[in-house]
Amino acid sequence: MTLPRTDTAEPRSSADLLTTLVRNEGSAAHPLLLSRMLLDGPAAARNFADAVHYLTELHGRHPGVIDYATERERHPAAQGWLQEAAIGFAQERAALTQMVVAAGPLPSTPGQAESEAAVLQQAHALDMLAQSDRHGTALGAALALALDWKAIRSVLDAASARLGMHLPACALPDERETRAVILAVADTSRIERAIGFGARQMLAQHRGLWDLLDARRAARGA
Image (cartoon, rainbow, N blue to C red):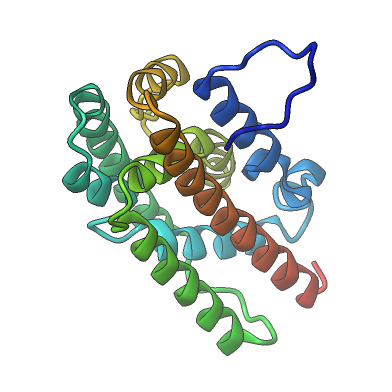
């Protein structure tokens, strides 16, 4: 996660680096979300259904990324955050389940078998990441998930409005709380690197999901 510096660059904290990483490489920066093709237009209902189903494939299972991190991370400064995040994400998981039912079946899309295989591989990669024995990696993945979920939740909020549903307010820890945990836990370069690795891998899986959804949207001519 260490960024190159010039002689005139001011030192940046590990929290700054991680939040910048999420902003630049996370869901909010993906062309599909930036273009609003997912959110607007006559094909939005099918696009929403696709997104909800595949987000559920990645994050609708229990235990998930944050749950595994809670089991593995023993740093006292992270325990309260992880417990709050686990409770908050359980609420998000329940919302995904309700939305899948309301959205109906997956829209018919060419290459369905290949899509299913791809998302199963992503889910397996997340499980392996969240159960890594490298100290800090699982926590990094959980921190990135919580920070990146703000952009994902904007998609879910838009989808729920179209489905006539009302989602409760997201109860995940906010950015201020998350930054405080990063600063407290990333107290060595080794831990900082592990957190950065976990975060990058988490964001890579999210980008892969949006790539898949965009390809499916294009295959349907949406």
